[in-house]
Length: 576
Image (cartoon, rainbow, N blue to C red; front, top):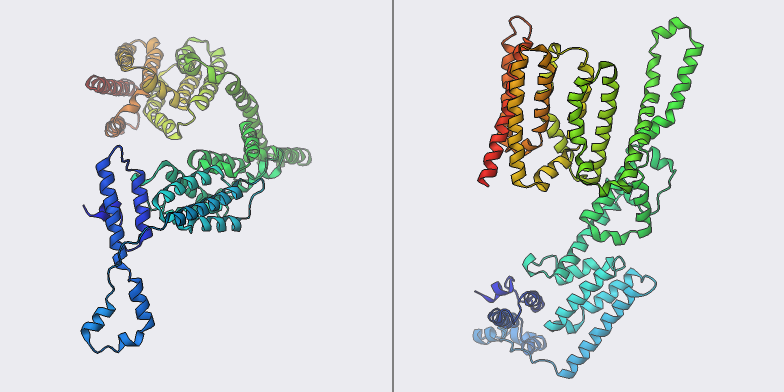
């Protein structure tokens, strides 16, 4: 292996570059742990320095050529001219006297102390003075000694990190001088990597200061505490508070060192303001304009005759006030209580409180069939609303990192069930149908909104043995629903309960089905749709759909998909 390979450096005559490469390698080569590697590194360093010295002209020959240019140029003997033009190898330089070295190191320490004093002074120093002080340190002759350079790099890296943001102007020059941005990952110490990351964070901060950046306005707002009743914050569209929240989250997760560039009290004030979930711009505009629309509507009702009012769509003027009332009711009835519960109790809730909404929402389906129609709709609607609020509260508290993709997948998995229920609706008794529809909708939405919590519980909080038992129980439930569906074909009074059983099995299998491979999940989905289309085309001759066939064949398809999923999952767990 050549000396350049050991030093991780391209062949060069730059002695400073060789010393820096040796310093980088020395930081990851411990003589006690790897004496052979250290010896090879030291030998490679000396050979590279010898090569570099041979590349430069000898000082005496250079002086002689400068003093007698004509003699060399007019020399008629080729051998003499060639010998005069060819520099002799420069012998290794003698080390400087110890007194000179001590003086250089003392001068270097004084320069370092001066730079540290400027950065730690009570009042921030002028950026130009800081850059001059850093340039003096980097130009110090003592850095030619490898030990001094190593200690200086570590000291400077610590100084830049500990004095941020005062040292921001020095980060880029230091990275460039010591080539920390060019060092390979294996050669970087944690301090080098931290300074390099600080440089990347400062580059992002420079982009934020550009008015064309998406978060430029949010960055300017973070320079001062929020004004609680500022019309700019309340009414600007798009919503500025969302941008501020997004920028704070981005900085804390991806650019954490930039928090030192913001006032801590200002960030705390914004955290309190955002934790209160201020009214968004759309709702604020609805609340502001609602009185105006109501005044116009009242004026038209008073000023126009009844015949004219019947021709004019004046009812559209009430859309805005109705939306404002709904938004205000949601904020006062859902958002504010949910925030209070998150702060006071939800973080310490047990399993029953975190996931109790799931069995509660599914219990609404048989309950909607058992209750009298007169109280079934209001009771089911109130309970479904409670389940949705309950699921949303704990989803935001415990699994807020779950993105909306899981919700979309769970909702998409519900589409075959929804179409099946829509097709067989005429077979069900009309009295309990409104309450049953509300119950099914509430259960599907609740288990979708809280899908992150359910998935985390299913895949992380229970062991494989419990999952296998749950999957076998789901198989038993699928067979029971299939048997009930077969009996209901001749017993009409059992039909709603059979449909409810198939629905519950389908809801229960959605979270376990998330572990299916993408190819198998798509195949199962397409088979369900394909058989549904075949069933529909088979009845196009009469332009009607035989709901009895849909009931039996469609229910069989849905339950068969559940059995397929459970068999695959049980095989996977057994193999694992």
